Structures are given as C-alpha cells and as structure tokens.
Length: 218
Length: 138
Image (cartoon, rainbow over all chains, first blue to last red):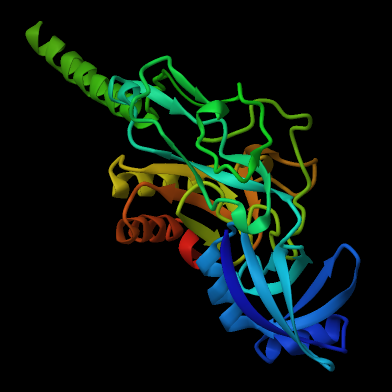
C-alpha cells in the first residue's frame, strides 16, 4: 500500500469561527480518531496536504502522521476517512483521519484494473465490467494498490471471475469466487440521434427537389 | 431534447436557488468536466446545444456523460394577454443549476481537445462555468 508522510499540529481552538480563520491562514482543520484513543483536533498546511492527496488520488494509503503537540512529536498511522471539499473552489475544507494498527489485519476495498483489449471486443463485442473494486483483508502494508486482470484472451461470450484474480499470499480475498468480474457481451447498437436527423433532413431535401421537378415534368 | 416522460403535476412553482450544489459536484465517470460556478436555469435546448457543441468538437471520439436533466416545467402566458386569469401553459423544461454542479463529463480525448469542447459548451449556457480535470481535483 502507498505510504505518505504528513505533519500536523494539535490545536486548542475549535468551532466555526476558529476553523474559518485557520483556512484564511492557509491551514486545514482536521480530526484524528480511532479505536481506543481519544479524538484529537488538528490542523495541517493546506498546500502541502493537497499536493500529497493529489498524489494518492483517493486510493488506499497509510499516512504517517507526525503530530506536534505539547508533549512533543508523536507518530501515528492513519487512513483518510473523509475529505470535505468546497463544491465550487475544489479546495479542502476538512479532513478526517482514522487511526489504524499496522500489525492488525483490516478490510480494504482495492480497485480492479482491466488490462488489454479483449479478442471479443475486436470482433464487435462489448466489455462489461460489473466489478470495479474487491474487498481484501490483510495487514495494511501488505494490501496491494491495485488488482490487475488481463482480458486480452477473452472471446465473445466468455467471462473472468474473482477466482481468476492473482492475489498475494499474505492477504485474503473476501469475495465470492464465482462472482463475474468481466465479460464480453454482444454489443447493443443504439442509433445516433444526429445521424437520424441528418438522414431525415437529406430525405426531406430529396423529397422537396422531387416535388419541384414533378410539375415541370407535367 | 430531454424532457420527463411522465410528471405528477403539469405546472410547478418557480422556486429559488440558494447555496451550492454539494451533490453532483465531483467528477464520477470521466477525466474532464464542465462545472457551474454560478446558479441559473439550464433549459432543455441549452443542454442539447452544449451537447452538440461537444460532440462536433470531439468528432465522436471519446465518451460523454450529461449530468443534468430538465425535470422542472416552466410556463408562459400568451402574448398580448392581460394579467390574471390563472397561470400560463407549460412552455418547456429546465434544470435548476447551483454553483458547483457538474454538467458534462468527458473521457477518451486528449486534454486540449476536451478543454476546447467543454469551453465551447460553456459558452452556450446562461451562467459562468469552468473546466476541471480529474487529476487536479481532490
């Protein structure tokens, strides 16, 4: 799994006004919580944290959070639980961190990537991918970033199931092995509206020309 | 043109738009998107005009998603009619758009072409918009 180093500091002022003044000063309010620990309210540098988040782009990542408090610097391992983003400016409003233990197994949703162009697609089929992520249990650092499935040999009407996935030995796949991940199905052709309109317009012009010519022929 | 197949009530009240669109404000399907930065009403004709502008620019390469639908009817009184005598008759369909709403999404085209197509689409609309990419948004 990806790892990231982020620095945060404990803050004592909280509430709407304090959060707004923090944002004006270029910092993002955040909270850290987890099992067996008291919640901590933090703030981080918005610019560097946004850059770090853009690197991971909503993938699973363990963040090594260095929290500067009154009792010195403490290192905590956390996941990003929730991000609040401004709908218009796309800037960060608030972040939630969830503390995890690196020596205890947890469940993660890992994205599935389909590689290659299937033979069936080249023959006119359509690639149907009902599964885009699978649940995997294991130690956080053993969890793969991505599960890759090669679909190049997939013919028309054929499918790949979860059993075809290559999973590392130290983690467990928590999905039914018969679940269809990808299949090549017969393509459904939907007529394009613009093409129809153009064809109708061309027919209309032809008909108009024909009607103009008809009286002349008489 | 987009319009609902069946509605419970033919006429609706005008309503007011306030606040930002927290729902439908992030890119979900494509790599590039057109986002509203002001509020306004988007008519079915404008949705169609912007769609055609995008399709003609990308020349059928790539894939497009329309993230707005005109669910709301608007009415109009006939010309040279005195005020009163009830609400006018349904004239068309609109989609109320709040700032932050994603209107169109695109994928399968290069960045320059996508930005050009979405800018042209934004020019057809009665409110300000901006083009955003998946890579530069959280």
